[in-house]
Length: 424
Image (cartoon, rainbow, N blue to C red; front, side):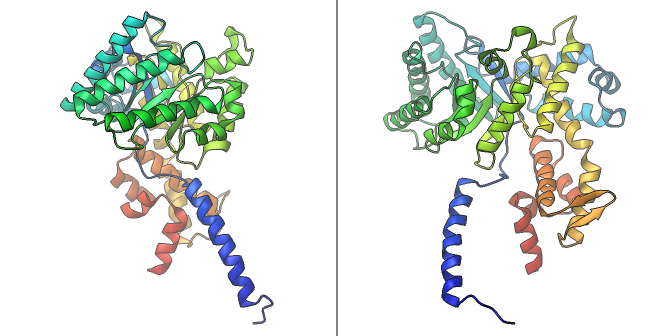
C-alpha cells in the first residue's frame, strides 16, 4: 500500500499529539469510579451534634411512616411508577436505617444567620469538638464539611476567623486527623481572588496544624452571575483543592433580577447556569451539585412539598446533575426515592442496549429505532456507574445487568473496556 508521509513526519505528529493528549487527560480525567454523594444536607452550625446524621434519619423515618406508611402510598404521593413502588420503598427505608445522610455541611452562613462574634467563636469551637467526637465514634456521614461566610470586605475577617478556630480545635482534638472527604464551602463567590485567598488560608493552616498538605478541599458556591461568567478561573484559583461546585438557585435568580414569585429551581435562568457549569467544569473531576427545594414538607403540606421536590430532583437528574441540597429531614425519603426510581426505571433498556453494543464489538448499531455509537457506549457505562454509586444498584447487580466485570465497571472508561476485550 502506497503512503506519502515520511517516518520522520509521522514521528513529529505523534510527539505533538502525545503531549497534547496527555495534557488534556490530566486536566479532564472524565468519569470517576470513586463514590460521589447524591446530596448535601445543610444545617445551621448552632444545631450540629456528633449524632446529627442519625437523628435526621430517625426524623425522616418518622415522616415516612406518618405520611406514606406503605409502598403504594409513597408511590402515589410522588408519582412513581407503581411497578417500582415496592423496590423503591424497600431501598429508601433500608438507606434511612443504614446511612440516612451522605454529605453534611455545618453551616455558618445562611443557615446560621448573623450572630455576635462571641457566639460564632463558641460555635466554631463547639462544632469542631462534636466533629472530633463523631470521628472517634464513627457517627459522622461519609462526607462532611463546613460552610463559612463569604469573603467579602464586610465578612472576610469573620469567615477566616471561624475557619481558623474550627480547624485549630479539630486538629488539637484529633491529632491533625480530618474526617474523610472533608471540604470547606465558600459562598457568594464573585471573583477568583476569593477562591485563591481561601486556598492560601488552607495552605497556611495545614502547615501550622500539621495537617497533610492538600488534604483540605474547598467547594465553590455558584450563586452570582459573576461566578457563572468566570467558572474556569474560579476552579483554577483553587490550585487543585477544588472538589465541588454547588449551584445556588435562589441567590442566582435574585441576582438576575427575578422577582420572588418566580424564583424556583425550574426557572430558565437556572438551566442556563447549570449548563454553563457543565460546559466549564464537567470532566475536570470537580463534582457538580444542584440546589434544593425551599418548600418544606411540614403538615399539612407534606405531600405537595414532596411532589415539588421530586419534580425538581428529576429535572436535575435529567440535566446531568446527580447531587443536590436537602434542608429538612422529611426531604430525605424523597431524595433517595427520586434517585433510585430514575435509574431503576431505565435499567432494562440501558442493559439491553449496552449488551447489544458490546456484542457487536462497539460498532455503530441500530436497535429498534435507537442509533448507538461510541459516545453512547460511554453514556451507557456512565448510567451504570451512577446507578451503582448512588445505591440504586449494588455493584454485583450492575455487573450482571451491564454484562461487565467489576474491574471493567470500575475503570469508568468504555474505550478501555473495548481495548481490554480486543486484547483477550
